[in-house]
Image (cartoon, rainbow, N blue to C red):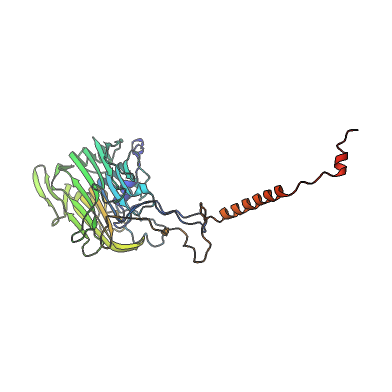
Length: 456
């Protein structure tokens, strides 16, 4: 119990890899004034970028799910939880690389956000923020990336030898996101052991870790603007890639990664040209030197019995899920799309053959290489240019409606302010009174006043 409590709790890792494909990157909501009669925020100063682009990519090295799809999803909207997929009883993630671009963010520091997270932990879908995260944001621009090691806590669920991260967020003062590189995040680890301290109730015929990765395991997330064919505008491209050499499982099972996976979403603003591209991994599976089969797009699953037929490890790749939709908002319309995938799912004691209701899909599920990409672009693509700020303040979400015609003008701090003429009018009247008083002839003192000044 003490060791499990030493795990640093993190929310971003599991929130990103488990989020719906079309959910927008989390940003600070636009605050409205306390008084509805107050004006909205002032207009920006100087030339402003014309580019509108939203995209993010997230890649998790490993996610451990105990009791997957075992608890319902709770929402504040009645009836919506029944439509959403169920959450795992407990989730634990290792190493997340996330890159987010959102030109519509209210805060300038949220336009480009890149993060490398060491760990994540969630219970029934609820998870707090993670300490030790490597972060880089823009604005302002960052000419160089931030690199460093990520903290590795002690936990019975996973053991790591070395975990590194790299983040890079860019922004051009005039062209906004039209800069290369734009948003890049990477995590890499040298050696990983998953479920190294299994409970005694799990009847595995081994005394080692369930999953071991002896070589380097890397995750990369990139968001950038690419050329749009036949146009001078740009498209938003979000890419998640994995790189691994081999994976070792309990029972002498070895998985060689012949071809790593790549997941890419490109939004052009048009449904016909916006695409999801997925290169499924090719994994060669063997046990004690004997080849068992190959996992690829044509053969996505493989069951391997470990203890007669009572204990079964189920291997599965891909799990690709796509979503696409048009959108309208913030003064422009376009098209958005997203997808999620996993390089390898390892299920211990799958329950699909029991045919019993309300059971988790397995006792435990370990996912290696969770990937998610999302991208959104306006119609016609992203414009790389600048424009002068508008003469009128644009309407912000949550701000009061513009005043009707004929309403009194707002207060100013120059000569047009209504109190300025009133001040000068009062000053002129005061000076006129002084002049009139000074121009009047002096009056002789009265006899009573003169008598009072005589000496006795």
